[in-house]
Length: 209
Image (cartoon, rainbow, N blue to C red; front, side, top):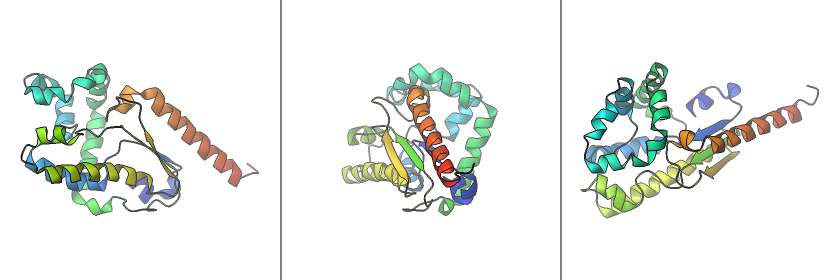
């Protein structure tokens, strides 16, 4: 999204897979200060790179292990990607950029003009319903937990509204943030559709080509 904002002439379209938004950065950090919410953060990526995280996870409390139970069928593929040095460097660069300049992230309706966007998100957010979030952060008041979940979901949909040509799609039932590994055919169908739309628009605008 930031690349499209900085280099619109080099961006033909975006297929975004459960992306992190500026709101996620702001509000998730508040919750993490209360108690670290389990997630695929920098510590986990670095841990994967050195083969340590999953061995530690085996000794973790049942609550933490349960958060990853649904990912077991795709863990090998995920670990292979996360252990790639390029993935670690890219992820570190991303987190550093967000931390240094959060206001540099594109935000607001129409911020990316008319760049076509396909937003693909899971049907459930990682810690939905409220009871699941409260289990992770016991001292979080019910009202604030409910507000957080609403903000999280609204922030997801706001990504599609960055462009006048943005569309949102829900991933198949059961898919999580690991959806590129869990439902690759679904993802690739949307990539193909995006490519065809870009190609058709190009030829419409350049009929002599």
